Amino acid sequence: MPRPIQTDMLRRLFRRLCLLGALLVCLPLLSGLPPLGADEPVVRDEAVLARQATMRQAKATLGVLMDMIAQRRRFDRPTARAAQADLVDVLDTLPERFSEPHMDRHSRARSLIWQDWGQFSALAQAAARAARDLRPNTLPALRRSLPDLMATCLACHRRYRRER
Ligand code: HEC
Image (cartoon, rainbow, N blue to C red):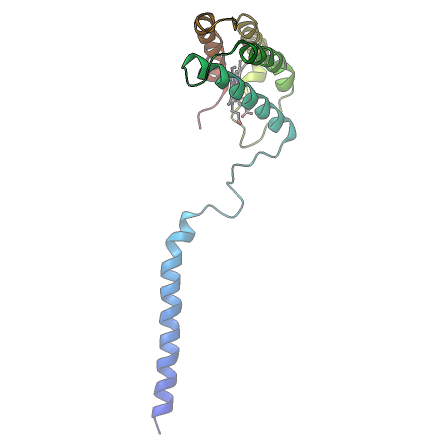
């Protein structure tokens, strides 16, 4: 009676083929993934998280003013003044936020900051000064004064923030 043996073999062959098929489907997916947990862009260092949050707050507040000068948002003086005050406060904290050379593999801060501390803190002070010099009382004045502040953000990023 050779028949049951043959079906048994066929069944095993079929199972192997299924396994191989599944493997072939999964392989490209698996090889495209980074090793588990190795490359998730998660910052763990508290001080790094704090300084990045400070930066995001600066960006959000600056965004309010940029929307006003681009007329994506209606200009209103109290909101513009409040945004200016917020930017001054946030930018005043920069030297303190960066004073210790905290690092994290997902931070974009360059270690040059701490070799070059004098210049870095001068740029931070220039940004805070440009925020103080903003003229939030009228739309034309805001439009004239905002680019100077934006230039101070860019100047520091160009030198002290890594490319992605
Ligand atoms: C004195 C230097 C300096 C100035 C001035 C500065 N930044 Fe930054 N900024 C940095 C550095 C350094 C980083 C990278 C921090 C890190 O990843 O640890 C950064 C990161 C950021 C980030 C990314 C934050 C995140 O979630 O990773 C944003 C957004 C940002 N800055 C916005 C601004 C804006 C808007 C201004 C101007 C109002 C500004 N910055 C002024 C140095 C500066």
